[in-house]
Image 1: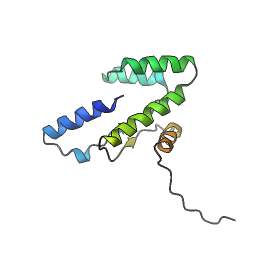
Image 2: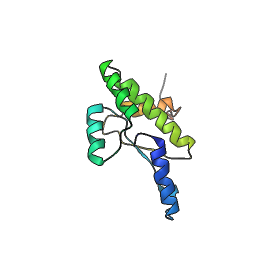
Image 3: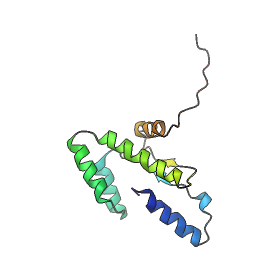
Image 4: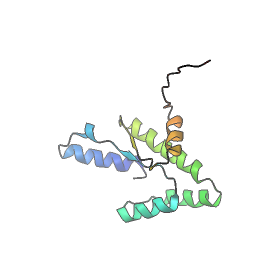
Length: 118
């Protein structure tokens, strides 16, 4: 899904059906490659909002795909959390850079313990 409202509708429909929605965690796939993501979405029957298509067409033209992908994914995650989502599951597909950038944009940073430093 490309918009938080899609997830919220799904979550609300599950709640109406008596499903415990606290166990539903949205899966987030940052867009590493727009062409591949678009093809994947179409094969899955996922509706791609026109504004997303237009934004990526311009980002591809201007060589700013990663910047747009980070911004859109960060906004989606923020919207989900503001809507009550407590957990997010990121699919990195062995390319964690965009996920790392999204986490930093959301203020989520690793808790690292320093050992054996000068």
